[in-house]
Image (cartoon, rainbow, N blue to C red):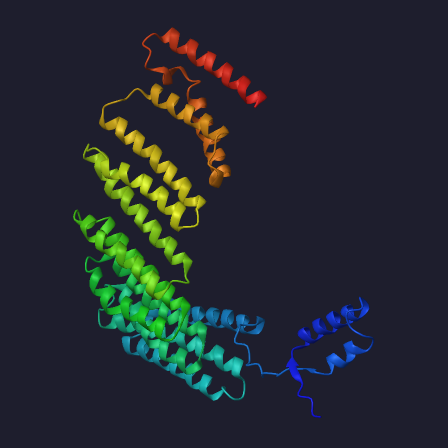
Length: 410
């Protein structure tokens, strides 16, 4: 009779052998039955998958990059030191011939010495940058230096994909994004650069599955939001009511595994709430009704939907303190003595009574709050609710002694 053996991996085979031997030892199996049962199993042969050559940089590649950078900087320094004595044609030809020679030499050495070839290409990329800068000067295009970054970046990206070189690729995209960053900071037409450059770069990052390009492009998107809506327009609040949900939808539908993006969106949401419903309300001397209503909602959301986040609990607690201060300020309560005493009592309560899910953060917050307010109350000036200076001094000294005794025996 032909026995069809079941195939298991080596770990499973060892486990079965141990179990059968154990059952044989305790009498559940007859003597020799463990070996007979094992004949029904065979170990699966390991399949050796040929590993692809690693692309990570080694010490030699790093040294070649450093050497290429130094040589490239040396070329640029030499050209700069003799610049004024040369004619425009001489300058143009020197830079043109330099980067062409290095590219040709790099192509020639590709099969003979790949590492040397790579270094020559790097130097050629530097010389190409110098040529771009000079062409800008020659045709009086140097008013906006960031435009040269764009031209340099676009010029070296084809080289990066020809060489399949991450260093050149990230340098090229980095120059383009440096151009966008400069435009964002100095130009009023940010939306054009966002639409024409950043959005296509973000799409390219998703298409080629390049995390670095995606992250740097997303960073520019969030920078655009900060500069355009948080710092410029009075009507930004209405726009952010549409933008913030879109950011969360983008995270949920496109990048849900990326938890860091969720937290960035949460930070943007909190910044918006702080700016729109706390800072602006305070500047306009309005009542912070929306801010007061949002604080418990944020507490609930952090507890219910964000795994009882300690970070959000702390932030929400501080926002709650701020809401109390804004409310007292709106009603003209400027007796800081009462405020300090109230917060001191709250700190003492939190030091000894905590919610089961937030025991440590509540205790730390309570100790910090009662220490800061208690220390402030040891100064006579903080007892301003009392008109008599002698009484102020007496109460501050008495409070300081009592709080010091508490600190010694706590």
